[in-house]
Image (cartoon, rainbow, N blue to C red; front, top):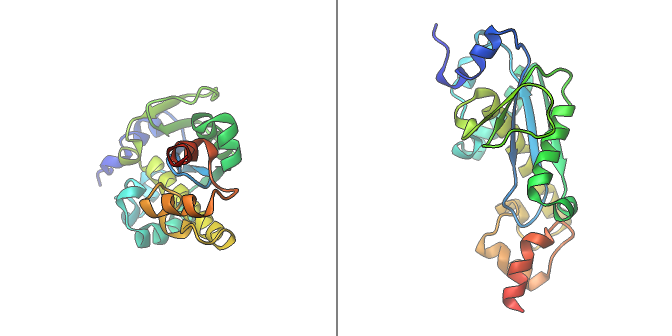
Length: 209
């Protein structure tokens, strides 16, 4: 049986005895509210991956129902996984790029063992001392990164639904903090909540002022 295309990044590394390859991805860089969340996932060898997960791809291309169904399956299959969260106030303090790195660092530090890192994007992790590869559109090229993208997306969506109950009126459960027209109107009507990113909302507030 031939390995699926999405494992072409992992298989050569497995063959070099990198048995614990961590795929890392983040979600939540663009929203006006809420945290940025990163996930790190270590998958078993491809022979142990069930057929329904071998066609996994970027979480943004999957329906919410499909992501929700895959979430526990990925958790059960993974040799290890971890999540890292950085809140809105920290994003404001250190900027979104550094907050993304911090979320990824927290996710990776939660793993028991990492031999190699595959990270989504065009930037390597500057603080990671082990071997790594940055993959542009990695969530559609690496199964490990695709799995991480699903965990990060579902977990962040769950956080935003919980925040919606604490801060009603903004529609956080619906748009998940992204800058939709309805979300922008709610900020102008209600002001910012403690979960809003001042550095992201400042331009909107300045336009009104």
